[in-house]
Amino acid sequence: MTAILQAWFRFTAAVSRADGPFRWIRRWWRSSLLLRITTITLGSSLIVLTVLGVTLLSKVTTGLMGAKEDTSISEASAGLIEAQRVIEAAEASPTAPSPARLVDAIVAGLGSQGGSPTQFDILLLAAQPGQSLPERGTNLVSTASIDAEFRLAVIADQSQLWTYGSIRYINGVSVPGLLVGAPLDIPSLGDYNLYYLFPLAQEQQTLDLVRGAVLLTGALLLVLLTLIARLVTMLVVNPVREAARTAALLAEGQLSERMTVRGEDELAQLATTFNDMASSLQQQIKQLEELSRVQQRFVADVSHELRTPLTTIRMAADLMFERRVEFDAATSRAAELLQNQLDRFEELLVDLLEISRFDAGAAVLDVEACDVDALVARAVEQARPLAVRIDTSLDFIGSPVSAVVAADSRRINRVVRNLLDNAIEHSDGKGVVVTVGADNDAVAITVRDFGLGLRPGESGLVFNRFWRADPARARTTGGTGLGLSIAYEDARLHGGWLEAWGEPGQGSNFRLTLPREVRGALLESPLPLIPESFEEMESVDPSAVRFDAILGPSSRGFQMPPRSRRS
Image (cartoon, rainbow, N blue to C red; front, side, top):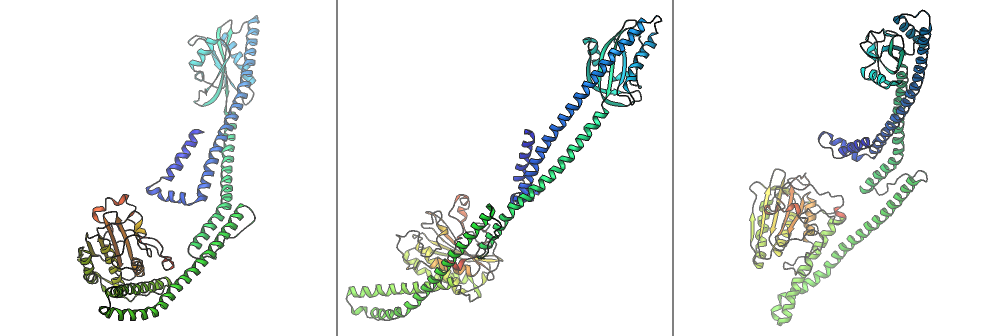
């Protein structure tokens, strides 16, 4: 039993870790609850039925052979008494028979008691092999049926013994049998051994019949148990499958999908609870969507409404700024600060309007053939005065092959400018390197700085709106906090990737990957996200991950592509 259980557990473990050609079995095994329960039930039932069958056959065999032994020993004992009676009668006769006739009389008399067909055979053999005494047997039975070991045991023990062996006949036939032997003293001849040989053919037929019945019954029970297990499992699995299907539809946005409730049992309670949960989620999602729409509308309305007073304030500020030389030093400085803050406020309004268009799904592309290499080169030159002011180097490495894509050049330029401004601001004067690379399917831009870098987990936050790695750090470029968020949306609008990597104290790297055609398939990027000097460290770096957060309703349903082979 233990060996069978161990074999079964080894089999299930082997299926769980199967590889190569057995991988599909592993997938099927892990993906199907019905298969696992049915297989486990089948295996457990097979083990139980095997144990029961073996036990039953053992009991039947023991009982059948025990009864055969009792009747055979009784028959042999009666035969031994009858043989002694024949010997005593012959010894008392006035005309003593010859040795051969006496032996024949004993064997014939005992053999006639076997019935027809005969139930046993008789062998009357001399106690010591090699003696010149007559020996006889019935039905052409061979003396080879009695092996030397059993013959010597009877002689040595001088009592009735029995054993299982083979009954051999002169014609070469051999059948299993029960052998009973006992010493027999014939005073006029010497010591003999009387052997009864009981064939077990009938018992063997009975055992074969029982064995066949057990196997057939076990097979039928196994099939029935498997079918019952499958039926019962399906009663449980089908509602679970329905729940999984309904959950998948809910995840796809079909919020009105519900499970069918049948009965009042635990599965019905599960379906009812699931439906209540789905209704609650649907209501909350609708509330959130309504809140999001109100928020988007509010941002758009506020942005539009602020433009009119801002225009008036701008006119007054421009007038004050132009005549600042006529004011005292404090008023002149105030006019300059007002002008700078109005510029930043206008940028913030523009960014908020752009974000509201993304959220409303109203952002569109003005697609044209765009030479990314030339566009990035111009953006680098435009950002160079800022780099000089912050005292940091700005290097550009162009693409060795054509980097022309179908894209909205205004949006791509905005992405590059945002990445450049961000890199220069956080470079700490250690330089910025901009690289353009291309292959047959995509064009990539990387902006690498060597400043503070990103802590673990921050590469998934840098594209959040108004997120700052260090809230206490003052902005030096006058940004609004929405640049990277807008850049991410611009990249997504093209069907591209915008990714970030960083190491504390080692700087950061931003990579924009664009398909050659708008929303074309992207499988990998021409440039690595992780600098080559850090590729060995990436296996333990939790920060170097692709940004995969959902940025509001406009990003719903967007699935990030697989990582580049070099990143």
